[in-house]
Amino acid sequence: MSENTKKLTINGLFWNAVDRFGNQAVVTIVGIITARLLVPEDFGVIAVLLIFSTIATSFVDSGLATSLVRTKVVNELDYSTMFVFNLTISCSLYFILFFAAPYIERYNEIKGLTLYARILFLQIIVHSFGIVQYVKILKNFQFNLTAKINFLSVFLSGLIAVLIAWLGFGVWALLLQPVLYSTFRTIMLWLWGDWKLNLRYRSASLRNHASFSLSFMFSNMIGKVLSPFYYSFIKTHFTLVETGYYYQGNKWGETPNLLLSSIIQGTTLSTLTPIQDDLPRFLNACRKTMSTLAFVLFPVSFLAICVAKPGFVFALTDTWLPSVVFFQLLCFAGLFTSLTDMNVNFLNIKGRSKFSLTLEIIKVSLAMVLLFFTYKHGILAIIYGLIAVRIICYIISTIMSGKVYGYRFFTQIKDILPSFLISAFAAGIAYLPLYFNLTSHYLILIVVQTIIFAIIYIGINHILGNDIWTELLGLLKKKISKKA
Image 1 (cartoon, rainbow, N blue to C red):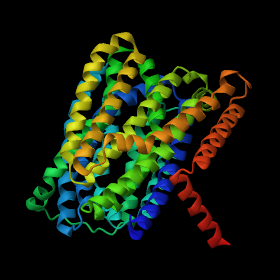
Image 2 (cartoon, rainbow, N blue to C red):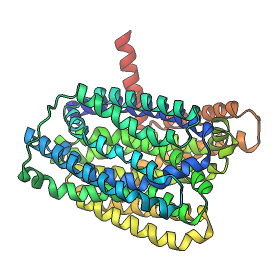
Image 3 (cartoon, rainbow, N blue to C red):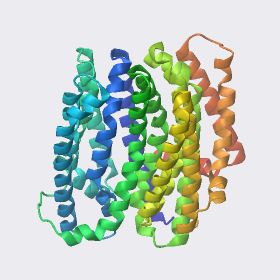
Image 4 (cartoon, rainbow, N blue to C red):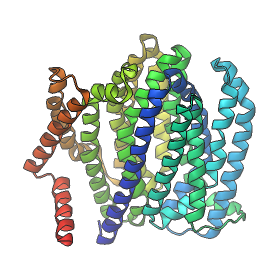
């Protein structure tokens, strides 16, 4: 990487990390409180509706936002065209879902689902009002502003959701939180963004981005809809309580992987776009990015798997103990999702969204086939099939990356395998206090396991002279010397 690209990337990573970790801290606290105040059936209701809101939101985003971010030169007419198009799509989708809500209730046999759906789906329209402002902020590398907006939005919406749950309104806390989040976020984007409302529309502008946008939209929609589809499928073949357990396991299981990969993806989409045509520099930057992701992602995920049981019982109470095994398996599956998503991110930067669409079609096809063979054997069998799908899709994504810009499978394995093996070893040692039941106090157990894991992981990387760890130490020393 050049010094300028490196500086922008480090700055972006810092503010994206502040953004994601700040948001996740609030989401975790809100999630713990609501899990203690609500029952599994309430989470089962929200899980049933997620598939519809996810599909609709993907249509609203429509890939135009990502296309504009990765485009080097964008004019005001492009922004106004995207605003008009997205607003029209969002209003049309809400209209369709509004009248489809009674049929959704009838199919799922959940009383009151019509009203729940109509309220939850309001976020679709609200979300569309803020997309242009968000794109302009990303184009200007204002990562600190997005961090502030996202944190305040999740904090305010989470605070109100906790109050609603505490007052005894049950599932309404879960339904109103995403609507409130979209509302607060959109308001702040308009207060602090620099785009002025413009309703001009040009078809030529839309056509210029159509090829990339359509492929990205469908691949993004298929990718996002898979988890909600599993919720709906499980609700159809199992009980609402079991659906709630799976929802909690998947929700927390995806968290460490999505959190860390989104930090890096959100940064590289902006910072690597200027060097996308310089193949050697781009490939080098991709390798560095993937190695960095692996260095952080694997230890966090393996540690989460290691402390899952004491963590769930301490934070959520033993009511959610059946979710632990779901969490552990889905957290492991999420590792391959994050690696695949990073490859897809690089392909999108290169403008190859059709490869992303092909991959998502393969993923869904495999998932459907394995669901057909596994669902009769229980939820665990379904999850094992999901793990197989994600491993296969990661391998396919490396083949695509190799064809487009030369980042092949064995090169990727070389970059990520050391972090994987060291993390697995550290987790094995850190699991021993739980295995031998050294203490019945779960908080102490979590702290002890975490310390053991950190000492082993950092110690081995320091001894081996891992490049990422060495560079991180160098940055810390530089910061300390500047302060001194």
